[in-house]
Length: 143
Image (cartoon, rainbow, N blue to C red):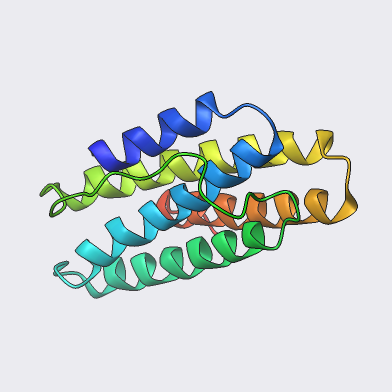
């Protein structure tokens, strides 16, 4: 999953609160794009429901990060145009999205501890909580 791998790499390289917030917003958007591309093609109702729940949590995470005062007004890293998503198995997608969710939760939680403004700390903590829910849902854990 090139899109999710690139999002994870960018999140790992992000240095400082604005860069982490910017990378996190984009990573949540990438999760939404990947899930959106696959949720209608799954043959399992249970998987479709889990994808829908994970997408809801990703949207909530993105929205939480958008409320951080330190989020830059424009992206720090312009996103390249992407073609159609690669065809992967449901298990591959589930694993990749859950992994990115764990990374998002970790980076955002760590960033929350160093943010100076209370609103930034709250936004990071909230976004981290939603990212953890994405990961837990796709890992089959009850969040």
